Structures are given as structure tokens and as C-alpha cells.
Image 1 (tube, rainbow, N blue to C red):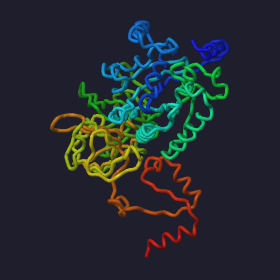
Image 2 (image 1 turned 90 degrees about the horizontal axis):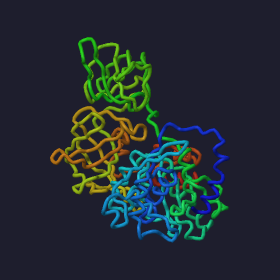
Image 3 (image 1 turned 30 degrees about the vertical axis):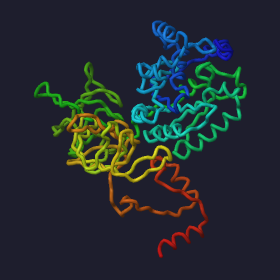
Length: 492
């Protein structure tokens, strides 16, 4: 046990006298960063120090680590995550490994994502359901291209909470200046992506300093929280930014006197007496009863599997959605989306795919518009997306489609694309909005130049919608007179 761990253990009795309030909502998080930054080791240390490793796992770890122990005589914690034979042989993470651990205050679901660029799709998959991203940086090398790539992907997937874990701080002699230099550089990167909730922590995953136990013995200059303390206080992303959503999976007719609509609540809440509307038909009704497998409920919230009984006969089919009347999703035949290509053949322009979202499956044409250059962070025009590419596309449906934006609701704003020939899932996607050609603003490569007061521009750039499209914007500060000259020149 390290000195820092000993110091922390001695303080436990005082902490235990406090009343512990447990958060019932599990936090989903990912770890990401460049290869060899220590992602798997960090999670392994989290599992080890929170006692999430069972006796048989510990025995297996000790056996597999035989001959590989480091100078501290500790096992190879990364082996708790890297389960594939190829991962163990190469010393890299390929697949997304999900693990579970808990503290007295909260439970956690953590995904260890690959660092290699060729496994970008795996990293995007892990980020798509996460509430928070832990980005690891080697204290010796600092921010690398892969760090920027993963921060960008995490932001595109809707993550707005970042923890910067400056790992291997012990190998720099616990250099405070180096930690602050890396923290400052990362904050500038995160702010450029529209992320403001950032916690920077100097850690040694191998020694366990500032992971579960604090590292004050080695780093008296750091007075912030440990990693696990930060995770305990993080907020879980919810689907409450939109009204009630019930994607209908099945119409239940056990007898002529009963008709119920079954599904899992994908957002919001509902209670008997609420007015709802069926989309895309637009038929209106009131909620008469909420039934589950064993009782009648007086309310239902996101995640509940229910049968909804309405007060009148309406035409509802599998794939429809029952929603709150005062907060309805978008309907239409053309939508903008961002996708991650998952198969070697990529996304072919003009090809028709099956789009599956919840219980709906519809035919759709996909037109690639631009692709994210993961090295520069800029979008470039394209008409084809290769495997692992992240791109913006226009979706054209044969019939009415129903979506919320992914930013508002991850369930009703997400989808997969299926190749009708091979039945392979070729892409995962996120709806960004309803497609529009009005005013030529979205046409081809045309741009719109705005001259705004600085305070108004700051408020605009602080909005989530601007943050989601930050890479599309080019912002310059200038005087009012100079702005007027530029606009006048454009009119000539």
C-alpha cells in the first residue's frame, strides 16, 4: 500500500461519521485518450480500490501478471479490462470493455475505449451512451492528436462533462508546473468545443494516487477532489429535456374490452388525465390508465416499461409514438444527421438503407455532405464516408419520420443504418435537426457573415446549438467600423 493510500485510510473513521446520501442513478462514463496513456490501468485501479474485483478475478489477475509485476510489486491492472487475446498480446485495447463498480455514494458503469485511430468507431460506440468522459494524458507527453480526436468525438456524442486525468504524474517528479500547463492547454481545447464543465486531476493510476485514495502525501500542492469523488458528484444525463415519449412496440388486445399500447418510456413523464397525441397521425386522446405487469400505476417516467390505455379508440400501430400534446417531436421526410460509419464498405452515396430507430424501421436515402477531419477538427466536403469516418449527412425518407434531436433525447434522436443486401449495421447516427434549404443558407458551401455586438456574440456562442456546430463557424473580433467596411466590400 502506498503512503498516500495509508494516509487516506487513517482518515476513514472521521468520514464515516458523516451521513452518506446515495445517488440512485448510476453514472455512465468512458475513458479515452492516446495509446499507452494508461486507460485500462486506471479503470483496473478503480475496480481494485473500490473492491469490485472478486476473489477468483484477483487470483486470475495474479496468475496472468506473473513475471509482469512492476517495481512496486503490483499486478497488471489493465488485464482486468483487456479480455481479448489480441489485446493481451499487443498490449492495446481493441474492443469496448464495460465494467461495473460502486461506492457508498453511487454506482458506475465504465467503458474502456480504444486509443488507436483505426478503432474510432468503437470509441464512438462507447461515448454514445456516456454521461461523462475521462480523458487521460501522459504527463510526460502532454496533449496529443488522439486526445484532441477523442475530445471532439465525445463532444459530438453529446458529452458535456470532462475529467482530464493527467496520468503518470509520478514520472515527472510530481511536477506542479507541468500539470498546470497541460490543464490550461486542455481547457482551451474544451472551450473551443463548447465544453465548460472540466475537472483536471493529477493522478498515478499505477500507484493509485488521486484515483480512489488521495495523493496529498506526494502532491501537497493539489487540493482538489480525487477521481472517484468527482465521479460521485457528476450529473447523469437524462431524457427530461423534452416532454413525454412512448415509442409503441406492441398493441395489446387480450380481449375486446381492453386495448393498450406497450413500450418503454423514452423521456418525460405521464399520469392519468394527461392529454397526448399520436404521431405521425396527429390523433389526440387522454390517458385513462397506466398498467405494468403487476399493478396499475399513478404515473410513469423515463425507463418504465408500461401499457398505456387511452380514453378513446385511436389508430395506433407499432412504430408510432405517443407524446405529450404540448411538447411534440419533429416530423418530416428530410432530416440532418451525424453518423459514424461502422463497416469496411462505408456509406455509399445515393444507396437506400433501412433506418431503425426504436421500434420503427423505414427506408431512407443517405447523402453524405461533409466529413470531420479528426486531425484538424474541421469539416470538409465529401460525397462518401469510409469506415470509422464521422460525417454529416442528409436523410430522405419515403414516408413521415419522427425524431427529436439527439441533444434533446438520446433515445428518440438516435438510429442505426442497415444494409438491405447484407443486413449488416453499417452506421450509427444522431439526428441534429430537420433538413431545410430555405434562404440558401444550407446550400452547398455558401456562408453567412454576421456582424454582432461582442456581448450578443458571447451569448450566442454559449448556447448548446452553437457548441454543436462550433467547427462550422469562424469567429473574428474586430471594431464596428472595420466590420462595416468588410460588409460594404461584400456588397460591391
